Length: 423
Ligand code: AMP
Ligand code: GLY
Image (cartoon, rainbow, N blue to C red; front, side):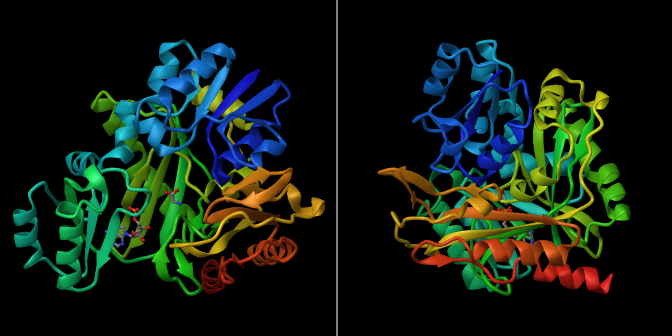
């Protein structure tokens, strides 16, 4: 089988590594892929948002199955366009990807179907938004409606910050058209859990839970990033909470999307907060999370391509999706300065002994050498029978990898470890 994977980050590298385990896979193309993915797949210089070129490539190269991984092409209708040419895909169509593409849509969906989430107000008029902010409870959370590279969420701890956030989104267009409408949301507190779930629109199969580390600095301080590391499973996510989420969040969401005529097929990501009033949805993503995928998929014991095809064919109920009972830890190595300014082009040295545990995100090949090309450069994943062992093994490998100006958090998994000790 010829497989095409749209995207080019650590998530796509983790997906490709897993897909390769299926013996019927003869060829994998990554569009655009990256310098690390190029070791095991053919990278094609077509951007993940260039839908016309992606479809033309798939037709020309007789692709048997396509996996569309990032949010942008999904929201832009990449799956619809590929299916239109008869190419089976993993990923939701545009009318379902809107669950991530518009926060206003997802908040209204949750309100209509009584799915627990933070209370909110929606505004498309700056004066009305500012009037509301003048008396809203503080802290408050301001979110741009559309996709904003994960940066469209501002948590305002003072009224002045809230006013500034509204103005930057609605007047200064800090996130372009994404901020024309905003959501002003109740501030929630509690441990966060990421749950990715396979769904074919009828059956929903949650994957092993995970914990992201979004802030740049140790101790969860500093700027928000795309994610600096993950562990799985997430110790806060007990069996009891999982059952509650299935009943009150996962199934109601799948049913709500069906009722709206927007059946979701693919990987639905539930960003949850475990509040004192029970689990609530912080966000939905219409795709695998990154870096969550880098700890979740290595623990998957069932063949990934088989599961994905069952999702596409509406036969997920026939598959027994199994996860290992081990623990995984992924530490992201970034270029110093990320998520703001950082240098590029530094040569990366990865010993062969650890190469299989590395998922490359921001690196390209130049003159035959792997060099940094992005802020988050790579993720290093270790699997072990305990969390503490997984953390140690991951950091041991990190120390063997080198590039100039490398930066990584030293405390990935520390909070989870503490939670395990308390429980
Ligand atoms: P999002 O891009 O929606 O995942 O938001 C980024 C981060 O902002 C989340 O991971 C949370 O840590 C935080 N966040 C989002 N919404 C809320 C909320 N209503 N209350 C508290 N924190 C939030
Ligand atoms: N790790 C969060 C995301 O993928 O959006």
